[in-house]
Image (cartoon, rainbow over all chains, first blue to last red; front, side):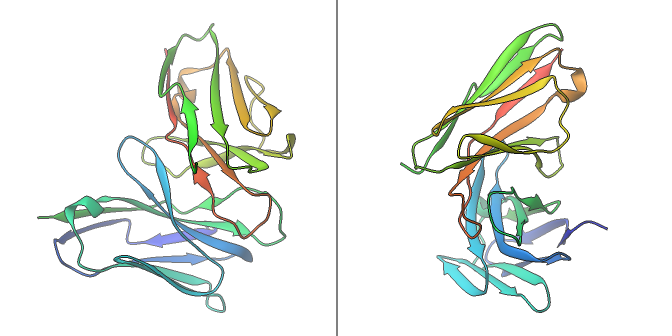
Length: 111
Length: 113
């Protein structure tokens, strides 16, 4: 079983729709990251969460530590939001030990 | 400056070649990482440097040799690679503390022929 599970794997929606991507993890973590990767490769960090909720523009990320679950929401989705969204966790224990990634959610927003 | 810069962006090399990938950041981060990403797969951790010392090697073959000459630079030396090593190689950096944001470079797309 993967340590980080994301759903759905693929999501196609119409412009303007409210989008939710889910992430569940099975290990103790110090932080959870939501990342965005466009075709061509570069990864952009959207959020880093260790508790609660964060909002940036049309993006909202929440985490429930007890349930080991996080969600990424996109409000008023736009075709430029089309990308792969990746959930990644840093194991608890501190220090620089790299991230463990989910398989990603491939999001397509159609005009 | 919140950038991680990787060079080159694309690299094609033969199986007998020796080449190097470079990564640079000027954010004062003391942790730097190499990840390998195959097509349609998530990135996989290869190496972690913390305070210029190799702290994690995820059982990477010796044909990949990392080097951290100073706190701003991270290299990945490549020698005698195989076609299956073709992938996107991503560099990242962060402070050395656990709950901090990670910054990624744009990656080097490597093709081994």
